[in-house]
Picture 1 (spheres, rainbow, N blue to C red):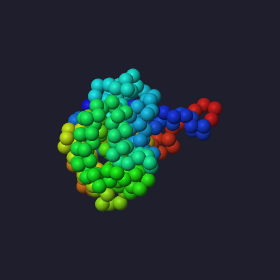
Picture 2: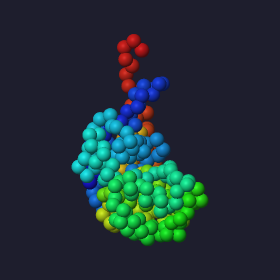
Picture 3: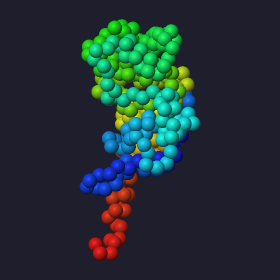
Picture 4: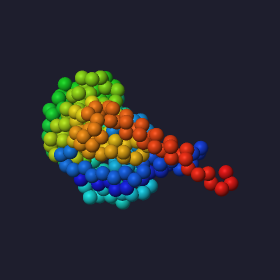
Amino acid sequence: MIHVEQLRKSFEDLKRGEVAALDDVSFDIQPGEIFGLLGPNGAGKTTCLRILSTVLKPTGGRALIDGYDVRTHPEDVRQRIGFMSGNTGIYDRMTAWEMVEYFGRLYGIEEKELQQRIDRIFNDLQMHEIRDMLGSKMSTGNKQKVSIARSIVHDPPVLIFDEPTSGLDVLVARKLLNAIASLRDQGKCIIFSTHIMREVEKLCDRIAVIHKGRILAMGSVQELEEKYSEPDMEELFFDLIQRYDDEHETTENTEPATAGT
């Protein structure tokens, strides 16, 4: 459902020149699976998700969503994804129902079907109590519920979540994670970016540890713990990061000087 092959993305920096935000990233995600991108801030998680959602164009490699290339068929990709982040904006002057309805109409859903769909989503996410609440009056948790609802109103097969629990308290975050898990049970293909270990352990079927644009390890939590003989996921994560940094610092310090330097 999601196929990423040797994906690269570089940006120009005035001081450092060309900087690689993604470097040869590859993975596949199947329907009914939650795939976690686990990494520290600046690891490349958001860059990867923005490419998958057609917001950014890759420098190299390719990414396919349900068989459609994000570079050559962006409109087809957008029809097949729902995107949500911790920074997704909510319109202050629209109610919860109006916002989800508005996005459904943008996708061209027939009116009768749209109303039935929204009613079902509001039931599933327990949103009827905020149906007529304006965005300006909503709590952060309720705004996140609306963001999920408008991301799934067109029933996309692929869902992209970029640190969706950012800024939420523990109880609200738990409800949000449960909602995402229920979407997996409906057969959705989900990619989930986070830097929170507990979310990975609770939610993800497989994960990729990403750091400085590169995938350092990939597999289920159990597979990674067995492979690296480390039963604590947090310690495993920090060890992978530290090992990578140490190796590359050593390489940089031992590279021979070029002529004329």
